[in-house]
Image 1: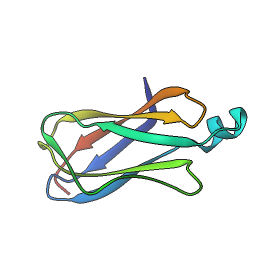
Image 2: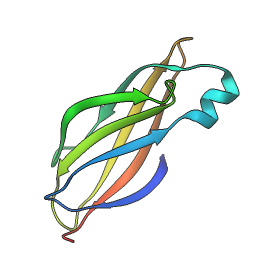
Image 3: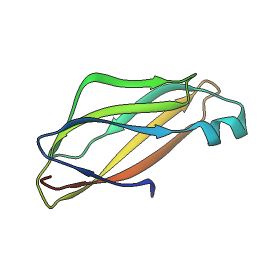
Length: 97
């Protein structure tokens, strides 16, 4: 399921992409403990390492690469302090800008 919409990414760019979990987390009164990303072959997850910020509610990944014209689905998996687990995905369309 694509939650975060679609973003356009230049294959030469190294950019950060974030998922805002605050609405879900506020509903369940919880915070993120761990965050992992599934970045498809063709894209490269770069440093800095994936992070969780703003009181444990927003996750961020840095991505570079990709093939112009391709559409990739990037997925973030989180585990909360209370042990809940969930995924959010977004589409990354690569285009020369």
